[in-house]
Image 1 (cartoon, helix red, strand yellow):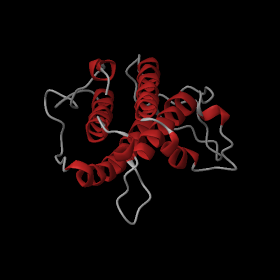
Image 2 (spheres, one colour; image 1 turned 90 degrees about the horizontal axis):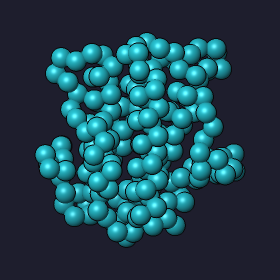
Image 3 (cartoon, helix red, strand yellow; image 1 turned 180 degrees about the horizontal axis):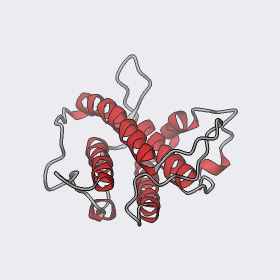
Image 4 (cartoon, one colour; image 1 turned 135 degrees about the vertical axis):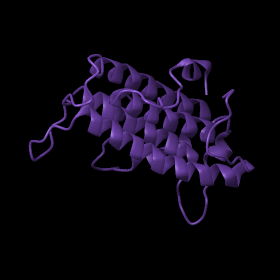
Length: 186
């Protein structure tokens, strides 16, 4: 990961913070752990699979970049998906990010994820400026419900937690890296 990614807000959830600070801190912890589990790998390692799954760390990087943009650019702010997502025919290739990751270089995959996280952090800062986790987001469901920022953050924490577990298994199979938390100097 680049110094820009690490210089962003990397912190544990506060022990006794506000609801919003706790949710954002929990999401940042998951992002940091995912970054540590996937960092510093070449194309072969990013494409390695753990049988019988077709899941790869490269696919996870690209998928989580997409999910970051879907949640915080589209749902939170109500804006359109940025490149490269805006050029994909999602009806023809609903899982495009997973399969197409094999053709991307490590630099492209890491850069895509880092850029999406940076956009998400900026979107969260905008939406959380008043400190209200209950503020409604731009997205409206088919039933007409508008979720809160609280719900969006909780959903994203869950998304990362699931994928961090998958990344943990894949990374261990690549080079034996194990552990729950990145080292303090990461």
